[in-house]
Length: 378
Image (tube, rainbow, N blue to C red; front, side, top):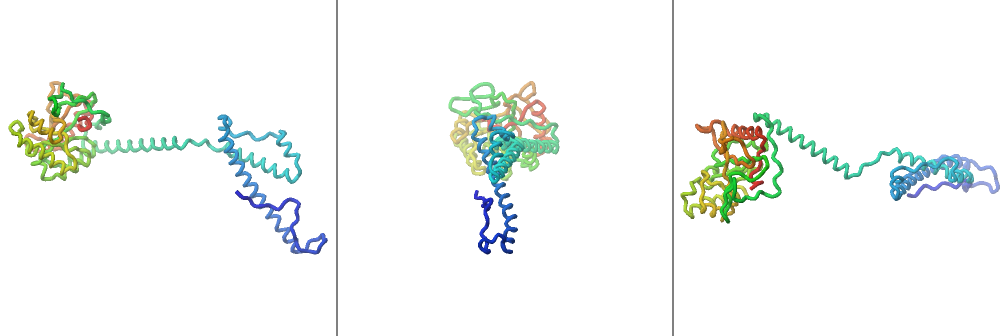
């Protein structure tokens, strides 16, 4: 950076006056008096510039120094009596002041650098900030779920499911899975060791806004299996569930017993409902639940022809006031599928949809199970 020039020491400014006269006139005295402060101001600017230059130079030298020990600490200032200081002291008077000023500026720069705290790498600082933000968001989310759990009367905070498996379980014929070659598997229990169960809700008759709000606030995953004749009065309700992660799956048009249908009727009940759900929800289902849990090989083949990849059935059934168990131990097992229905209070449905959801969540939590999303495993 250019620096202000100073009048050389010992030079005399050109002033008007009588040639050979030793006494300056009034204008000369005025200019001489004014030149003193100007010269000191220029020298101050030069010293500041030298300090900045030395500071940058010291930083650059440390950056280039191959010795890590030297690069990490400022160099010590020259001690009194060293050849460098002696040489500076032995210079002529005009140069002596400049060199001493430079030495003092270097010492000041080195002292300033030594006092500066070590800077953390930008990436490490960014990672720490991101970690703190993530922890804060997680804490805020947990507080929201805890508040929702209290508001909806849960006995304990629901357990969070593990991350979805990177590879979905193989659905080979065996315990919990029935499979015929080339046809969609029929699944009662998903083959997994994760302590998860899956909540599935059928039909679509009752469209309870409190149930939708409770499921959304608690973040409970579930899968809906819709029959068109019951759901068609308000598909908007189910699209609202879908917006909170609920998948809309196929449960036929009119809920018939598939064992009594011929090929054309099977095509109509299964594949036409596939088309309806794609139109209403924007996605084509790949899961199909046969009404009453009854199916035939022809039904499996028809469903496969229009995009179905699995028939999930169930192990337990949930009601507002109790659970019905398939197993004698009356406990959940990893991968169990729980059936319930979109229903209003009635003679055999003693409670509300929120009552049913509360019962399922509390039972799963008490046994150490989380509720997971069925489509993440099938």
